[in-house]
Length: 456
Figure 1 (cartoon, rainbow, N blue to C red):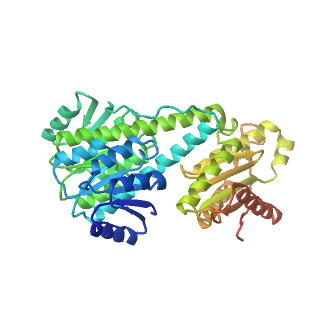
Figure 2 (figure 1 turned 45 degrees about the vertical axis):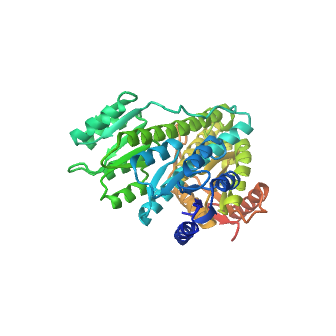
Figure 3 (figure 1 turned 120 degrees about the horizontal axis):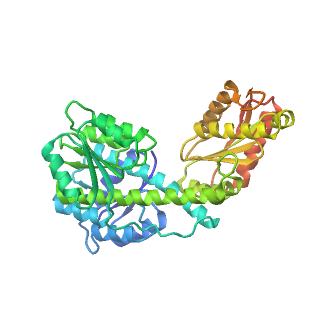
């Protein structure tokens, strides 16, 4: 995973050590030796994460973090404080200033990289939602809505813990502010999660005879809980399990013995982040309903795609990551309309849109371009991967007949696909479209039912 990390420390040796470690893991590293410079770089360069020392002359790390979170341009950037301070009160101060984590020196490399990768992954999902919010605002689909969460939100929390004393302590801490449910059994907890009504899961990784990690993985695989934050409770000796937990999508953790104030601060932080993501998704849904989707297929329409593609290209240039563009045409679609009527043609378009959506990722932008043509924009994706996804879609369409509720009952169809990728900072949306369209033309000219790359 490539990302830009801003390392902030007034001691040059500490900066160089972290820079060397991160560079060895293929992260791009920016550095600052004081708070003012860090704030300027963060605002100007928009890094993916800050590793921030606390004890710095002038402006300390707590104040840097508070200012970052108060600035709308940098509030979404994750912050990990890396410091020699090791008291619970220090961690709470950092969390209340807006930090996402508080790691004590000397930092375990595996824990550091797992935390960095986890936070970068979460930030990229949020970035995609934020970009779509901005696109919707530019199109006038939603207003510039207030996205400032309640500083002390309440929520519905599920606790999965089989230690009676620990459970009582957590319940007593959270109940005055939150609606709290608890289960000692993973199977019983899974039954409750299907409702999708919880805002946070607190899961012990030390359940007797049960696998807390597997439960976390199940939460991430279910549609109803995929975006719900998970906070795990771990023993100090469970560092390898914690790394695994972060890899599968756990958001945060507490090391036993649990401090009540730290528990409160971490719960508050996760609920605020969930509120923010939920509001972005709600605004996105609203904009989609108003004007951004094609009414027949439910996919994004051409107007939205063209506007959002420009934003994605700009980010691709800024981050140095490839962007791929796929254009799909249903073969001989006109003859379907001519032979069976437009109602059957509409069913074909609707069914194809479902198959297209099932074959792309959440971060990809699938659109109906017009008529029987569809487009997929794939951020952070090179040409070979885009080709592989396109070929998988082509094979599935050719292999599985389309069901119709009118004669002829089923239809065997094929598609032709053109694929291209961005070629550098000079590339434009029009050039991407032209190359993909030329590749599509070659696919149709050479017999249809094939994928052609613009590089071929």
